[in-house]
Image 1 (cartoon, rainbow, N blue to C red):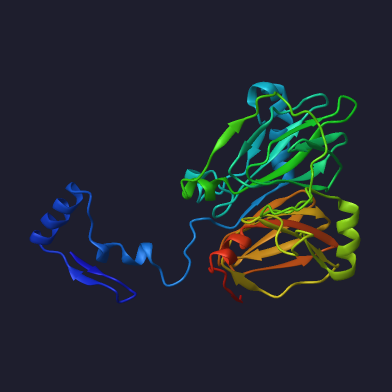
Image 2 (cartoon, rainbow, N blue to C red; image 1 turned 90 degrees about the vertical axis):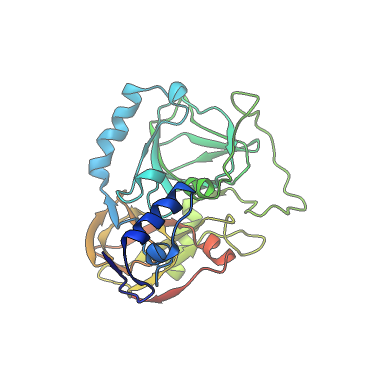
Length: 328
């Protein structure tokens, strides 16, 4: 058999001797680079993730049923994961990003823990949600963003007098696992004792601001059409490996197509519209979630005024010198 390569890197005709040689290599945990060069070192990114849209009207029944089937206490984190068809082995939504939808009833809470993965939560609906990060407790409302940076103790819950709350979790769990760098630890207390976190002489690599209120973010967005959540001390990203932003699309408006290294997960915070991703068109409305794989050309348009929330791994791409952008 002749092993031809469209990129011209290898053009090897197999012989019985070569086939025997390959089997011997395999037996010694070795391999021939020329047989896999195109797969492991492509000319441009070839993500296994595929453009995916999760419609809220299809997700919601599964989210609502979860509390009927498993308690928050037994589940620890009662989350319906959004798993990209091309990244099932990593439980990833796109690339090395994970996302899921968590639901909690009034009076429920998660036990306190911390992990290497960086995390954020975008509140989708409900009243009475809260998160405690390194002892500081924050009340959360619809469309608020809260951070639980890597290594911080955190727990979540819903006040007894609140309503059922739903939020989107975003983490870089697949990235941590791909680097063999993940850790998970349980707090000595079931939940943290609330206190005031000192931010004096802050030198940690993530934002000292954990809560980003929707009202403030939306007011800024109305002025500039793009609002990037930032570390107020440095002006840089909120966490070393994850960035987030809001994008305003006015009715009838469409963005230009472009592509970039790094993946992004979007949620429709308001309105309705469409996105073209990798040549495929997706129609979306409020609370829908969709994934843009690395290097996939994409653009968005609005049927009515819309706001898109998104988080991405661009800070990691930039820190590693891997970020690249091009027209779509």
